[in-house]
Amino acid sequence: MGATKDFIKFRQYIRTQDLKVNEQYLLELFFEYHNTQYGYCFLTYEQIMQSFNTTSKNRISKSIKNLQKLGLINIDKRYSNNRYYIVNVESFIVENKSKDSSFKVPMIGQVEFKLSDEDKEVINSANFSGNQVKTLLQISKNKMDKVIAMIKYVSNKANIANKFGYIKALLERGVNIDDIKQNYHKKSIPFIDNCSSRNYDESFYKNLEEKLLGCR
Image 1 (cartoon, rainbow, N blue to C red):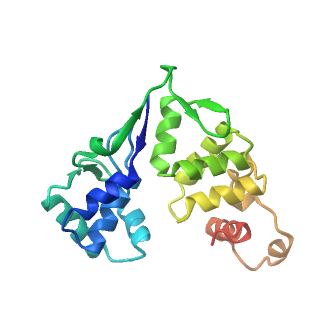
Image 2 (cartoon, rainbow, N blue to C red):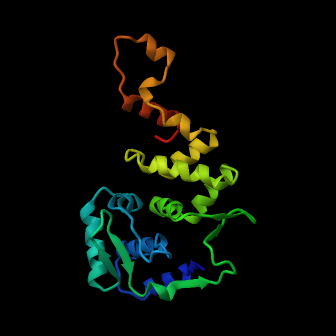
Image 3 (cartoon, one colour):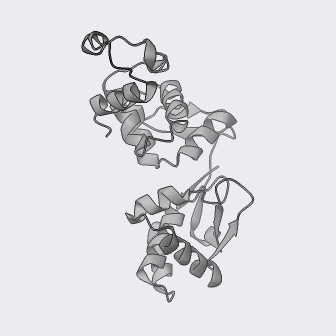
């Protein structure tokens, strides 16, 4: 059984609350990234700050505390990333009945994908929207295993801010995940090899790769 979030109803609900602009935006952000399977949102502070286009943690922290004080959200701080629970969120979730009891995710056209619990956790942890996942599947020609492998690889790279854009660029260029997993110091670039007096570390090759992919 799947579920659909009623954004229109939720936005109407937000307008009935006495909230500041930042608080309205944050509450809607939590709803947008609310995972209907797990029942909470687990955005990191960095992701929230990026959405607000700010570098101020205090600004975000203040808005979160105000929403909690107003009884609109509950926070579970026992994990590396806080888990944000929207109070009465079930009022804005529409359950979709499924004829198949197994977990299936319909994506492109009539194509359906059966995902393991591990694969579902990988996709959920990436915080990609449904449209973003569909875009990656379209580019990869519905190769879910390839998309999962890319997400796993990029999720471990803390220095990549736009993970969706990075994966999209790799898929559009037909890059094989096994090719980019090799150690960067083993790559050979003629110009660099000729500069024997210079010592290029792994980070140099990583930055170069990202620039060539247009992700920086």
